[in-house]
Length: 444
Image (cartoon, rainbow, N blue to C red; front, side):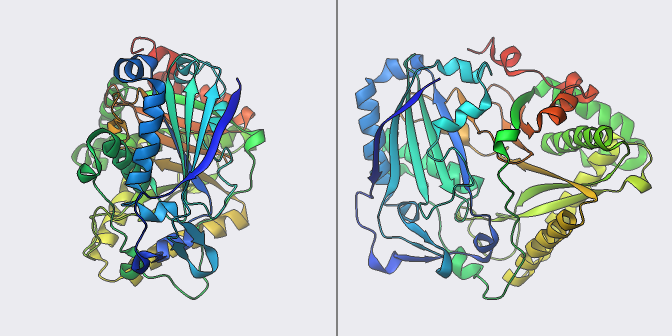
């Protein structure tokens, strides 16, 4: 596959940002966020594109609407200033690329192509290559007539909610006009002010992308329902029947169990394991943080499995562990009355991760979930995306995305090749997941 960059420039807001908004102070949660990019790709098939407008008209609309929507999302046209922990909303612009791709869009959706090739469809192929640029987008034109919009957004300012709110705002602006756009609030710098003292930040992994592979495992709604029924039946008196575990909770536990088994096979014995995943606390605290607030409003939840306490690895036990920590996080945020309370819980979590990484006798499993965000509503005027994709990651981890067709979940798993071989053969992974070609074949 060849990707040829044909255009590279900066798109500025159509209206200059007022001087009093120029210096945007970031929050304490932004302060400890990793200096990386989060990247996603929105793929639109040729059929939906061709029915509505010509390719040149679509490109012109994308460029013009980006300029217009940046007047509301003005920090995204600015530059990150590390030593001041601010965004200089200087209107330098979002980086804008156009590229020609000599491949079929369906080859990506069906999983025919190596997931690493997806990284060429976003402006920053390696998410660890951090720069002061806050937002960059890449419009990919496929030979088949399809279109893919790749976006890379600075994690120093944005989490998943921020990313997808912007994409939907851009799409709405192009389709209905700027007046219909749901904007973000930028108040976290004052509500959750940054700290001047040293603190434990979220660890930044070493770049190991060349030695890893990424595969997609799709759990259909029917498979998740069957898994839920099995877990509740096995749970007995553990309380799972009353708690009704969510789909994400179930899959966190199922994938974690498979990874613990991979480590056991590799090390020759069952080891302690720490499962880490983010908890979005918008709307879950008494502190008056608007629910449409942009920035990093999450803290990592850490769930511990201790091998000595449990001679046998059981899925229902891991489901319980995950559920207990989610409830504990919800309770602690509901009780938090000051920003310091929220921040302390986040830094304690980061400290625990740091300590385990240093000791090295506990396996640390990373997972992030983008489930329940509205990324499949991004209609720029030629229909909603057929598929929203992540990219190959530079570290062993798992990312969960919703499927478009039903209430299923697509797991993006990045592992070392030997670990992936073992993971793919896990009985529960085989029983409840399917490959992309099998899932999407009747949908395309």
